Image (tube, helix red, strand yellow):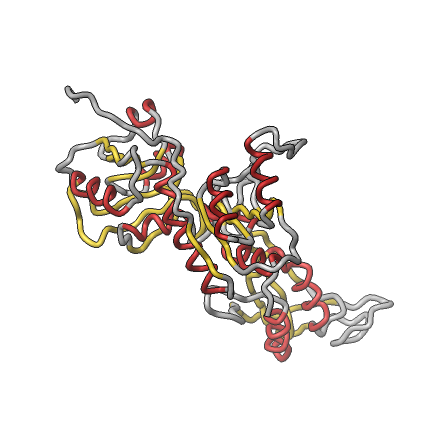
Length: 374
């Protein structure tokens, strides 16, 4: 069976949904024919010329990168600049390009999960969680005898799901009263007469996106001509996905040993790992963020972590970091490369395509030196 590019894209978008990308980001398929067959996929952090050359030499039909090629848009793909040349080389080699950027940052598992796994972090949670899917609560009043049937209809339409449970509801009993007016066709009672009916108050939650379907199911299943109900928008709650991760180390480590551990488990770069803090400080809770993460310094401090590992830390935010929060700064490429390895494994397990991880170190900083007096 031939695996099409469209099939691989569908798997990638299921693993790292584009809906999780930030509004300013540019993710998804950059170039490639959705109907083209895909046998081999190369995964890398950066869509640079050297990586495209590696993909062509490998005979890859698709290149998947974390960083976008075009983040700010363009009016030309002429081969007169580096990005245009990348597009031309990809097309000439018959290789598509797919980007999973902030959608892979926010997804679970995502970029920071792969980084957290290097340290064996347990009970991880996002440093900055995205809001959970918005929920409504439906309150409806129905005769006792019809409550079970109505709940079944609401559940079939998508209401009453909580975690690993379905058909979840809360009920209480009371008395409903009404007087049918001329023109009404009451299921219970008679026109002009006051009617009192023992009723069940039924409450269920539902995804806001299922609102129309659930209300339609309510009207179809309810015995009354005009059912009484309330629909309430629930307050937003933090979700399980988002940027960065924080969790518990398998055993506490002095900061000095944690820095050495980071240098050992991360891909080698000229940048290495530098740190700010007392080398003897004991770290039991570690926050991490793949890529540039100094914007999450307040969240890292609030998480209860004693140390925060990320990249691209700037001088002033680092100097003003909250007391008690040690900082570990690694190369940007190195903190995101673990996701590339994990992504290759997940894509290979979900499809029949062969996946390869780029062997190139695309961290642009290749040389380093220290003063003899440092």
